[in-house]
Length: 212
Image 1 (cartoon, rainbow, N blue to C red):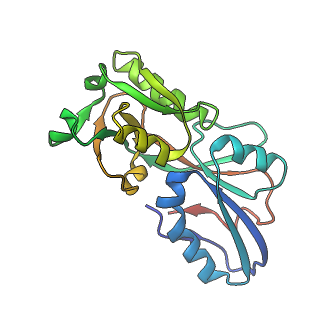
Image 2: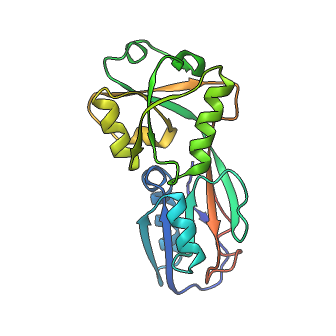
Image 3: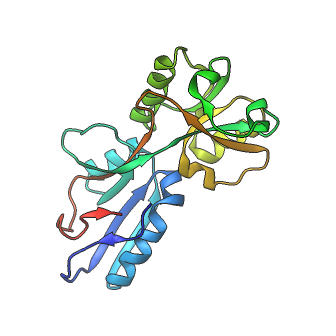
């Protein structure tokens, strides 16, 4: 969990442009930025919601300083720092038999399910992680929706009964009627990374060393 931003004692001023994926904007970023603002009140911080692909585009064009995303591997031309891993959950319609059952769900138990997914272009590494995890669990993911945009859209489709969805743990902070979350157990490398991504920033790396 993020409790603050570790910084050095040097003065900071100007504007810091930060973007985060929707679930990180809800779960990881607020406490860190409150701490940062208390340390450096002179610094203006702009925050927006962007997926991984848009973050990399903005970083490449120097229109963004720091992105919080879910890149699994180093990306040429960018500095990617892994901050941690999030457990995997499955979002279920409230009347689903796994939702009515207590306890975790084995990934292999989802073999017969229909899945709601986001566009691969939004977060390719996460998309590929989910597919690979299901393959490792012995089945091929049956995707019925692959054009959902954002967590709210995904959870709305789950609530409507279109299917189930694999999501990182912070997504469970979004409260949607008729959606239940269960932890997923698995043997594959399916946990979702949290990364801090940088291209060119006015802050030296010593100013924001890590989120903890």
